[in-house]
Image 1 (tube, rainbow, N blue to C red):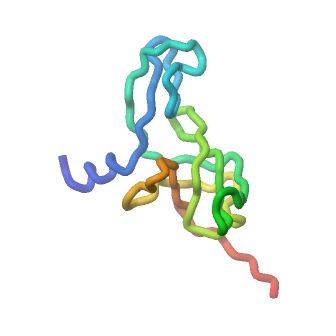
Image 2: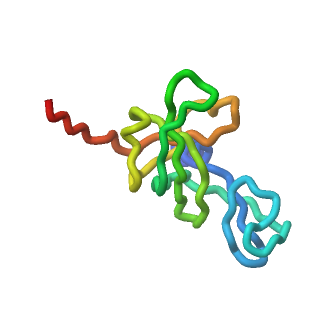
Length: 122
């Protein structure tokens, strides 16, 4: 296996797929549809699309972005999106896993695939 392919797989996200109904889920002990505990681990590239976004100020002095991201495997998960000012992350923005080390908090951190377009009317 090439090092580029290996690095690409390592920056993805692990999720589970139910052996009974095929539902994909992220960080769950039971299937959210049929409540089965027979979950098979799978790996996603981590690329997704923002479906809801908000700027939050909880527990920190600086504002940050929290977004619900839909992954192509069929699950939605709350993630922190970086790579732009928190208010510049929009619904429909494509995101990818943040390269580098993961945060100590265990939060899922994604970055924007394309920087936001600025419309300065000044």
